[in-house]
Length: 583
Image (cartoon, rainbow, N blue to C red; front, side, top):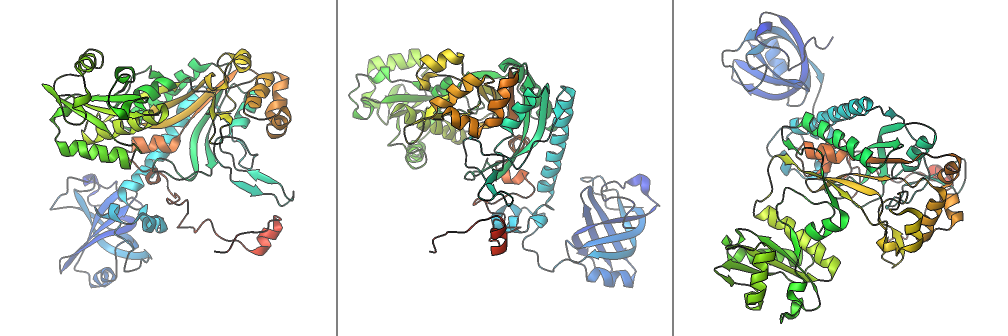
């Protein structure tokens, strides 16, 4: 009724055929006695020409861009061919035009324009149905669909079984705030939207399913970032029975190399991926998600300066970054890096020197001959190097140096182009100190501690490592996983160290605690993040550009106007009263 061909499939072999196509009017060109219309759908663009037909001319005069029409006409060879598009050798001589969907004369912004990226993001999100017509964004959402198909095919090929787990679940300590859902049938009680299907997938292993997966929605009440969607995200969640860390690593390497090689032309790291223990990552890169395309590394120079006369270094951890050929930069570059360290990285300052035969600039007068000799022998300093120094308490020094390293890589254009560099970050600490000074889980509370029960009973909690791991690609964490703690005694002890009584464990994690009493296989798993994978494959630096209907930077859906107030009746149904201070 509306079309027998799409706008991307007609070519020179169709010349002479009478066809029916439909789509959106992308552009209208008026040449007086002739009009040309570029008609667009998901599959491409076809040129329509109107000439010597007063009725069609009158209809065309009423058309505006982005209205929807169907066109019937004969396919003819174009005299002025467009080799940039598949349909560029032909056009359609219109014989009939029907308006299927009118459009307002004035659009909020141009749909397919180089200036689309300059449009205020909230306006684009408010009119997301228009924004999604943009060719680049539209193709990214189609890419996301293809990536999901590839993931499902790969998991099926590897013998995993797809199982859906509940959305209305219980609260679980996954490191973020829960979204709570009040119960109408059980006054005063709440469901929680799952931060991850963690407990359910472990229960599936107890239930005898050998390998489980799903592309799972996860809900976390976290602050938005460019690489983290607020509220909800999707992950390829999987778990394996009778598996250890190495088994999971093989699956992850297979997943990432398969997906990235299929959907990009960039170079993809060969397997096995590099493995970096967490503490080494913090020492060398100042971050637990290092971008290995950046050749710069952080080195510790604390002992080098233990007898220094430079007050800013006394009693501090000193980190240095040696930049080969960095001595070519002028004073303004070093001043700008110092400003970055102070304003963006939170440093008190950024010391530096250049090697130009002599050590010059910055803190050169504090670089003694002995220090120079050691810098050149032990730290790789050569002629024309620049050296940046960060001095602070250990954790702050690592963090600041990590940010300086990243910024140097960007400003000096040191980042490898068109490659995906993967690594595993391993051996995460089981516990960390909370802001209140108490022991808390560092990563995933259901993980197996390295050293088992003995480690939990004899070691300082902050020294206990866990069989936990991340996959990092080009500076983004794209997956987290762990070998699970499947022993109920170990589980109770692990939670006890984090301040949970056995009664609380039974209450909050009763299903797992109870299930583990009935024969539990060793199991392990991981959860690659779908949104971040697509973001990397699409070469985007904004995760909202790979989600069809994302929230804005303030976690609001400006299209659907959520969150929003609800009626008193709705609140009464779920036994809720609102208590908000009026300001």
